[in-house]
Structure formats: C-alpha cells, structure tokens
Amino acid sequence: MEEDHGIPQAVRRPLRRPGWRLIGALPCCLLLLIGAGCASRPPAENPDALAAFEARNDPLEPFNRAMFAVNETLDMFLLRPAAEIYRGVLPVPVRSGVRNFVNNVEAPVTLANDLLQGQWERAGVTATRFSINSTAGLLGVLDPASELGYEWHDEDFGQSLAIWGVEEGPYLVLPLLGPRPPRDALGWVGDQFLDPLTYVFWGSDSAIPYALAGADLTDFRSRNIERLDEIERSSLDFYVSIRSMYRQQRNFEIANRQVSGKEVSPLVPPAGAFEFEDDETISPGL
Amino acid sequence: MLTALPFWSPSVIARGIAGALAALALLLVAHAPVHAQSGGEAAKQLVQTVTDRGIAIMEDETLTFGDMAQQFRDLVQHYVDTDRVARFALGRYWKQATPAQREEYQQLFLDYMVKVFASRMGEYAGQQVEIRGVTQDADNQWIVRSVMTSPGTGAPPLQVDWRVRRDESGRYKIVDAIVEGVSLAITQRAEFTNYIASNNGQVTALLDRIRDVAARPSLDTDIVPEVPTQGRSG
Image 1 (cartoon, rainbow over the protein chains, first blue to last red):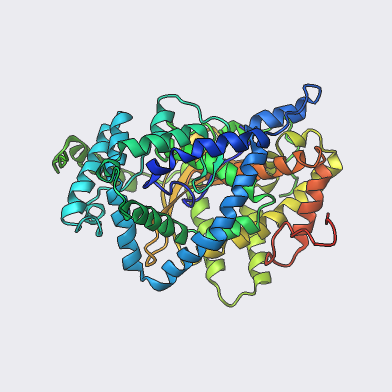
Image 2 (tube, rainbow over the protein chains, first blue to last red):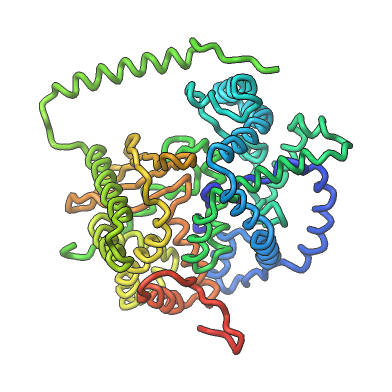
C-alpha cells in the first residue's frame, strides 16, 4: 500500500472510439519494446529496496517512462494545443453540449457494465438518462436528466473486471491511451465489443468514430489544463505522481466513489495508518 | 432496448421516506437540550472553517503571493497536523532517518507543503465548498464529505473528503484530503519514497530537495530543474 495513484479526471478514460482498429497494432509494438524496457529487480540481499520494488509494482518502469515521454510529446504538440484552441474558441454551453453528447453516446457501454456488475439501480439510472437525454435532450446535447435528479456516472469493462476480482497487474503506460495496466487495457478492448457503435461502423471507412474520439479526448484535456500543469510543476517526479494518482482514482471509481464504508478502495489509507506507536510526532506546545 | 424507470420506483419512495424521517429527526434535535458538540460535528466545523478561510485567502486580490503564502502557512500550521502527515509521507524511511534528520524534515515539511499547495490551489479560487456529511472512521478519526463546485464554469463538482483526527489534547486537526479519490498523503508518500529509493535510499537527498523548494519565494519554476546542457545539476 505504499505507492501510487490518481489523476483528477484528466487522462482517466479517453479514446473509447476507434479502438477496435488499433487493437491489432498494439500487441506487436508491445512485444518489441517490452523486452528492452524491464526494470532490474533488486537482489534479495537488499530487502528494503526489494520491498520498495514490490510495492511500486512497476517492473516495466523504463518502458513505461519511455511511453510516458512519447505521450507527453504527443500532448505537447497535438492534444494540448487542440484543447487550448477548443477552450478558447468555443463558449461554455457549446463545450458542455459536446461533453453531454459524448457521455450520451457512451451510455450503452456504461449500461452494459452496470448490468455486468449487478448494479441494477445504477443501470436503471443510466437507462433513464439515455432515454431522456436522447429525446428531450436532442440526441444527448442537452442533459435534462440531471435536472430531474438522474446523475451521470461512468462504468467501463476494466471496472467490471475489477469487481469480478481481477487484479490490476503491473503498471503499464501505452502510447496514446496513457496509463493502462493489463486489467484496464483488457477492459478497454472489452468496451469496444460492448459498444453498439463498433458494430454500426464495422468495416466502414467513416471518420465518425475518430471524430467522436477526438471530441472526447479534446474536451477532457481542455478541462484539466491548469490542474495537470500544477501537478507537473510541483512534483518531484511527474511520472511517479501520475502513476500514484491513476491507481488511486481507478480504485475510487471501482468503489463507486466511496471513501469510507465497506466498498472502500484498499488504497485509501485506513485510520490506523495515521497512528504511530512511539508517538514522537507530538510537538509540545503546538 | 431502453426501459424508462418509473418515477414512483421503490428507490424514489425510499428516498421520500428517508427525507421525511430526516426532517422529523431535525425537528427533534432542534428542540433537544444543547450538549457538548459530538466529534462528528466538531470535525465538520473544522473543515468548514478551514475551507472558508482558505478560499477567502485565495480570493483576496489585495494579497501578494508572499502574503498569500504566509496566510496559508498560518492556516495550515494551525489546522493541519503536519508533523503526523510528514511522518506518514516518509513511509518506510522514517525508521532510517536520524533524530536530527527527522526534526529538520518535519520543520521543512510545513513550508514545502504550503508552497506546493499554494501553487496547486490557485485554480480553486472562486469555488465553493459544501459540506455533505461525516462518518466516524475510528475512535478519534472522522471522514468529512464535501463537494467543491465552481458555479458558472460548467465544470463538474469535485468530491473532496477530509480525514480529521482528534489528538490527545482534544484538538481536531486535518490529516488528509482526498480529492476525487486521490489521497494527498498517499500521493506525497509515493513521491517521497520513490525519490529516496532512486537516490540509493539516502534520506538526505530528499531533505536537500525539500529544503530547496521550501526556501523559494514562489513556485514559478519547476521543482525539478531542467538538466543544464553543460552538465548535470544536483
């Protein structure tokens, strides 16, 4: 429980759309690069370093850092400028419309995963939101369902796998997709199959899936520009901060955003973590 | 494929009953004799005070960055158990640090955190914090749930949970803030322990870095400087 986790909604879940076209390309890249990117495991004679290595759960760290750098470059030259232009040019209602539309298009996947997790009430909320917003919400651009009290929530196949007991696996950073440990990478693939739009556009050369992915990603990025800047500026190691934050936030989502109670994420520090037996921390007079 | 949920579903009815019960309870409590505040209430009040004053500081445009940082520092020193958070953040390396190192580390920690948070909190000006409730997590610890909203920007509300601990002298202090599931204490510990581990387990390396940051007047440059072309720094 030593390490990791959490991005404030930034790189959380971009790119649901033309995923099925990239599925073939990724494993080949991975096999080539992973061989060169393994971290060296400390010897057993150094138990502290070994324990730190295990806790970090990042045996592919050199590879991951390389991918992280690739993503940072792509972000710096492509995604961030696009996000800044998007935010600068379009007024808030238009950008909210984009966000609402994308959320609505992705509702079937959320619904499928709600059902896969046995969350019937949440599935009901998702279904209601979809039907209200698609009709009264003008194909999802507006969000009247929220006004009626049906709050949006997100589910993906990675979370379903987690609920079924699949471990996250070693940390993994993929190009374009960002942090995507094996369970979440598998989740992303699963989502492509759960998505009705995959089948609608199967085999067609339409640009629509890419346009949707681009809109989703750009809008996400535009909402987190300053936040990520601050984290980067104030981090000792941006890669480590993102790794820690990603894992924390994933667990938070898996626990359906509960911090205390029986559904809580194992990464939220328990009360006992802040109690120390030999309490040298109490400074007299404070 | 889609079935709309009827508005009179069991959950809606349940919510209605819960609302009625809550109103009834409030009515009873309002007429109850005033006793000493319960721990949960004290915890909520602490978070309300801290967030109100924190936001007021950030919104005060007459302050220079130096003034703002100083006021933040006072606020944090008074209401956050920085010594405890510092010890948590050092993780396994606390045992290995000498008493002198531990003391210097805890003294530096406050200034370091103020610098880091003053920079990270800048964007939270203009926001409102709404306390939603409190649950007891241990005999002396509570989790206060709150939501941070930015009215008018269209940004979704952020869930922020505060861990409040009552110390042996009865004072309530914040020991962690969990923003959208991300615990600041855990993230800080990840950074610190990783930094020490990649410097051959030397706590002094971390102390040097923290000392450097804490001494800066502001965080307008990166904490970790770019490697100069002539050679390596630090």
